[in-house]
Image (cartoon, rainbow, N blue to C red; front, side, top):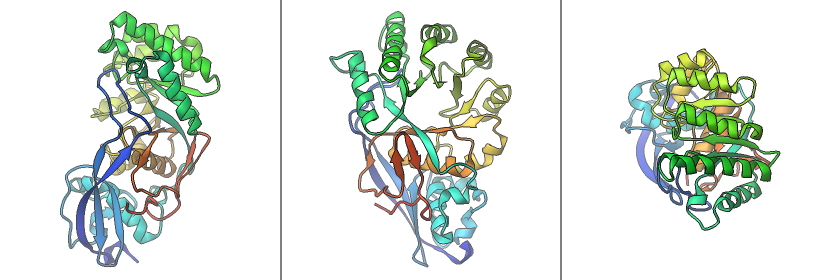
Length: 348
């Protein structure tokens, strides 16, 4: 049945609670991230008994009485900027009506199984008595949970330690994790906690650690990114940028010159519809930022399977309370997306 034959009968805003397996500590810019947030979700119901829901991605417009076809084009996304707050709920609802998973709506251009890295390795050494051993303990817990790639937060000298001591600790942590996990991928994320000179010195000290990518090493600057790319030339290490509030056109220009390898715009705040619009223009790879909620990891995996060109997605260890995620398979560092309609997630 066409989307035009289904009319929205109610728009509800509710909340979900995420829980991490431990308290997540500091990064280069922020204090403790706690044990899991509470976030808003939007639930759309139709006169035909269909329900779609998803994280609220912006202001919620009352679309009661509108046909679903007026609100979303399955081939491109929400039809109007004012509907971006309903982006995920509308994609889920369209999938429910059309009996298609979201990745099929997006084109099924990628693999339905995608590598997933652990995004939860923060500054545990600064929050517990065991120093670097605290970081290794978190790695061990997440390795036991099935992760085979770790993204290490670095940049301790930006706020929490002296510059020299913090940089030395970043090096120590990176080398310790590599020694403990010689076969795992290691990514590092500085949250803009370095300048270009300091970051290149860090890279020299960990040159044998074979980093998969470096993320947000310093505040975006085209000349510095070109310099970093030149330093990394031949190493195989990727540069990942664009996580939050990106100035998109300059980022795409820098990526077009080859000085950004992976674009990171957040899967929710940037949105599925925006990713659908921008992906044909992306000359590099993409990996939508998903930190904060385990649910965002599932969204990012559906996007990867749908749009392709996503080599890995960010994993958020933990659970969404009351949410049945059994339609997604997790094994040995890989996440396989649901083939059920929509996002394949029953309303909690």
